[in-house]
Every structure is written in C-alpha cells, then in structure tokens.
Image (cartoon, rainbow, N blue to C red; front, side):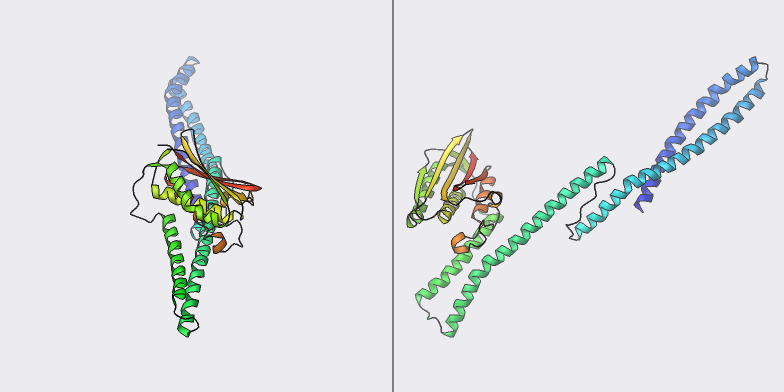
Length: 353
C-alpha cells in the first residue's frame, strides 16, 4: 500500500532525526555532565568512582526511556502524516487512472495539506479542459459528417437517377453534379486550411492591408448588389502589415461573405480600416438582427451557428469565422465581435510593420 510506504519513510526519517538528537545529547551529557557530577559529589565527600557509577546508571536509564518515547512518537507521527497525505494522493491516483480510461466526470476531492489541495484543484481544471475539448471534438465530428453527407446524398441521388433513366444525361445535370463536387472540394480545402495542412504556404511579407481590403470589397460588391445591400468602404492607405497576402484576402472575403449572408435585403454594411496604438484594425459591420450575448464568444468555433436551423445554403458551412481566427492569430493578431440590436461587428487587428 502506498500509505504504508509513506508511513514507513516518515517513520524512518523521524527515527533518524530522533536518534541523531539523542546521540548528540548523550555525548554531551555523558562527557561534560559526568565530570561535573563527579566533581560535585567528590566535594560532598563521595568517591569519584561511585559518583560516576551513579551518574552513568541514572542518565543511561533516562536516555533509554527518551529513546523509546521518541521512537513511539515518530511512529505515531508517521501514521498521522501518512493518513493525512497518502489518502488524498491515493484518491487522486485512482481518479487519474479513471481519467486515463476515458472517465471525465469524476473530480479529485479538495482535501489534505495545502499542497495536495492545490494539486487536486489543478487536476480538476485539467479534467474540465479535457471534457470541453472532448465535447468540441464530438461536435466537430458530427458537424463535419453532416456537411459531408449532404453533397454525397445529392450526388448519390443524381447518379441513381441517371442510372435509372429518370434524369437525362444533359449538360444541366452534369453541371449539378459538378456543383456538388465543387462543394465537397471547397469544404475539404477549408478543413485543410483550418488544420494548417498546406506545406506550400508562402512566407509572410510586408502587405498593404488597405489595398487588400479595397480589392476584397470590389470582389464582394456583386454579391452585395444582388441583395440590394449598401456597402461602404473606408480604407485609406497605405497601411503595412507583415502577413501572407493571400490569407489576408481570405480573411476579408470570409468576413464580407458573412456580412452578405446575415444582412437583410436592403440593409447596410461597412468595411472600415483604421490604425491605433501601432495596430491596424479592420471592422466589418452589418445591419440586421444582433447575436445573443451567450452565442457571441462561440461564433469563432468550427461549425458553430447561432441559428441552429440554418442550412448550408443560407448559413454556410460554419467554418468561415474559424478560418478567420486561425489565420489572423497566426499572423500575430487577434479577433473579436460585438453585437447589439440592429448591428453586428466582426473585427481583427494586426501589428503594423
């Protein structure tokens, strides 16, 4: 048992300390005290030999009794300390074994010495983080499976219809098949981008963020025009940052596409670039329903949607903002979002070069 081993080690250490203390005291008393006692007894008329004999017998008995008492005290102390220390450590070890087997629901008790309690609290925090990551992993697998299943089901339906002669093999049918394949390809590319699996990524360089922002707005303008959304662009430059130009274009494109999806027809959107405190800050604001406060911190998660009822056509794959967060943080920046009734803003900031 670990408790017995701890008790034995404490007892041995305590016995060693007690024995060393008694040895030092015995040497001092037997050598110094014996001479003083003999001199005092000789002055009183007793012989030196008899005085030394009396001293040795009485002091030896006291030292033996002191040794026995010290030994018993060391053993009792070892048992008490072992019980206080070993029990929470044993329980923590048992819980750690259960955690290793996949049980993330059991937490370590907050008991024992302060150091052991601190260890238990740190362990519980770790288990909570593991549980959160496990939940995220499960949600990711479910959402990824759903996103893949939809185009695969469509492809299967088209192919079966072609095989049975229900659909004619005309260009329109093949265009639909190609659209579903492209959809799968875009999803795979997005997942690769999230995982950082592209070994051919160029090195960062000095980029004019204002120019990239204006270009992104020009490319997104037709999508805003089709929904009668007024897009205002405020991006004067140059504003130089150190990043990958293509990835900055991807970040801005994702934010603008997000604004197109969630701005009501006839609404307003604004792309704004400003500099402050050595940073370049880009804000994309759109009118429309705000995002509830509990959902706001989670909008950057993979596949997370504020409105769970949205399908891919109306709400995207749910990974655009996750890509934005990853690319911006890799470039040394940070992201954020604010929302209130009638307006939502997504922003990112990068250090200026």
